[in-house]
Length: 416
Image 1 (tube, one colour):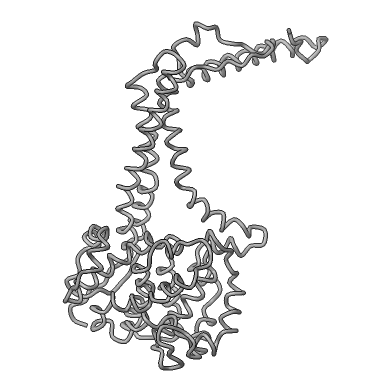
Image 2 (spheres, rainbow, N blue to C red):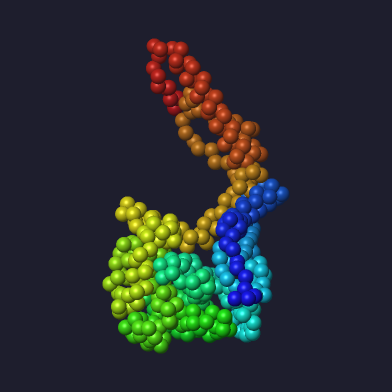
């Protein structure tokens, strides 16, 4: 179609952006503690030292939070760089779209007229969906990947595959109009929350309406991906071939991703069990033709699309590793405080800020305790290095003495 362009995937650039976003707050927090500790120096006395250390911790924590918020603004760009998409003419650059994606309220209220403007708006909203619904991060991208392999099996035309990618990527866009509280609720939703959740296909259709002239019948997948083959789905209660091809394909891809994805709140289903469940529900939930096409996809290809965490969850001896990996991300706030504390402690250590704690223990022939004048005015790093050097030197002397006197006992006498 004239006036279209194709975005190529930029996986390396996306990876580098994500790495910087993750590391920058940690480095900034640690560096702030070190620099501030060296600038201010260690005060005299236990109480002033404690207040000084608390100040370093506070500053490091503030730097961590601010740096994290600033760095996270680049995540939408990383998400967009992962995509290989056909886009309408006059679509802005990915960088421009990423800049606009932070004002979600304005985007949801905008009414673009041109397909290119509509595509830019929708892509900006997609980049925000992961932040809005933290429980299903990456879900839309994986659903889009599964629709690709089904398209291969069905031998769809290149343009139909391009439009199906949009359908897979957009299918849950209506969740932006569902409250975060409902989406991220750890337990089972109540009746009111369930009704709110069930509105997301209809809300999604409203959001992508400006793109419908360009997407054609593939746009129907957004509103129809929760319809069932037997007519018991929602929101329209459509059955059989009343459901668009896109809706039937996305329904299978969406269900498979949900079953096999590793979540902090549930165990992932194995690939074999998920495939078995699809077959069991063919003819009731899902179009049997689409399920049959999905079953023809090789196991190796599916494992690559599922990702390493899902593969780990399939191994009997590593059953909890994948789920634990996701829980590590959920503990990010706690880790951040730990990093801030490390930054404050580093500032104290490098500037000689913490009072030294000397353990009272018996003196042996292989132990050397630094004299008070050696410790005075030094930080923890200095004391640690000097003690290690002294211990290593004494141990070497003791070893030489022991080897030259074979008649003496190899055990050093401890002097009380």
